[in-house]
Amino acid sequence: MISRNGSPRFFSALCMSLFLMLLPGSAFSFTVVIDAGHGGAEKGAVHGDLVEKDLCLAVARGVRAHLVKRPGMRVVMTREDDATLSWEERGRIIEEADPDLIVSLHFNTDIFMLAETRGLEIYYPADDFGRPSKEAIALFDRNNRSFAFGKFLRDRYLRSPLFSEWKHDLNLFSQRDLKIFRLTAAPIVLLEIAYLTSADDRARICNGQFFDDMARFIAAVIVEWAAKK
Ligand SMILES: [Zn+2]
Image 1 (cartoon, rainbow, N blue to C red):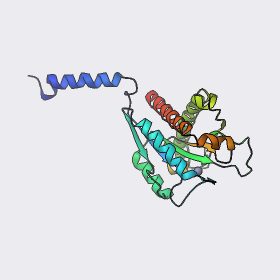
Image 2 (tube, rainbow, N blue to C red; image 1 turned 90 degrees about the vertical axis):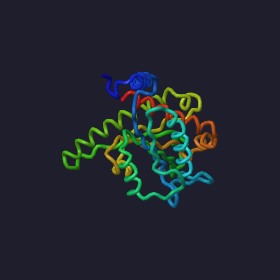
Image 3 (tube, rainbow, N blue to C red; image 1 turned 60 degrees about the horizontal axis):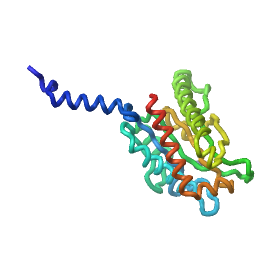
Image 4 (cartoon, rainbow, N blue to C red; image 1 turned 135 degrees about the vertical axis):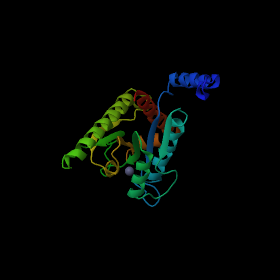
């Protein structure tokens, strides 16, 4: 006697599931939080017409648009629009998502307006050995995994057209103790995508093609990373 789960229909569904699992890009289940920095009353950096909160949201939406096409990829946004988010709300959204990775998106300014201060920056959490040992060890592991993703992104970036053709610099890849890193124990990186105070960066930011290329690049790196997990 063939049980209900042993029916031919079940086996054909099973074969189809296995087939889909073998397709490139579909063999994983991965949750990523895309965090558009600032929002609402909190504008972030402002330079002329360029307002950081709007730029962060535009890139976040672009990244999400590319990610949701991928089977197995669950995308959670901390904000979908120009909402003001408290740190508590941002932390709650991240916690409820139970993510494998968080990518926080920002834009930067340099108060000295130095031409050298330009390009992409990648930050991952700094180790804090002042915490109780159990907590510190868990975060040490998280920080290592954050570093690994950040390094992966950096390596891909240096071989991407953003770097070689758009000539968008890589300014920093560094650990730092940032407020958002303290909201979560999940792997996280923060990207400062460009400097609003750099004329070169501004020219690129104002080019829709560059914007789309950047969003596509970030999404592609996340997908590649997720497929390795
Ligand atoms: Zn910011």
